[in-house]
Length: 232
Image (cartoon, one colour):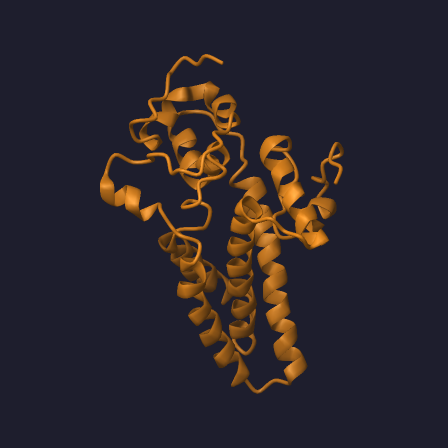
């Protein structure tokens, strides 16, 4: 397929994708099946900050999960409540995962700035779905989301249970990122894991406008984005 602008893969892709204009979406959904990492930026530091090995996720964020959990354990509420608010946090993560994936990562866009921003946020993952160093979120992005959502959450969630909700939410993120990596590079033998892997592969190659769930199919069924043509 020919485009008005020809992307040079030897140069930073981020500075080029905006020039694709209305061809961006078509170009994006012709994935390149390679485990190597394409060049996103010509600047070496910017390029380095986009590369994140999967093991860095638990190394960096499990201590924060443990700290929030320890704070919650000291709160004067019964054990059932403590467990319940942690589970609530995990549940809220799955909703956040779905809404972000659907309405931010898959928004319909056109134009230089919009194409460029979309490619940075999620587009590169659909173009290079097997890039093993850009499958999990970079630490800087996670830190920004963590601080922003913590500040927002304090406006609505009572301080007594807030550490528990944050424990669950952050744990949900860690499990999501590791699970997402495994969906692309693992070979699950457990039926439910295999089913979720097939579902995510369907999203990448057939269902870009539906099947947004990664860790669960629940929200796709709730919000009507379950793919009618999908079969296990």
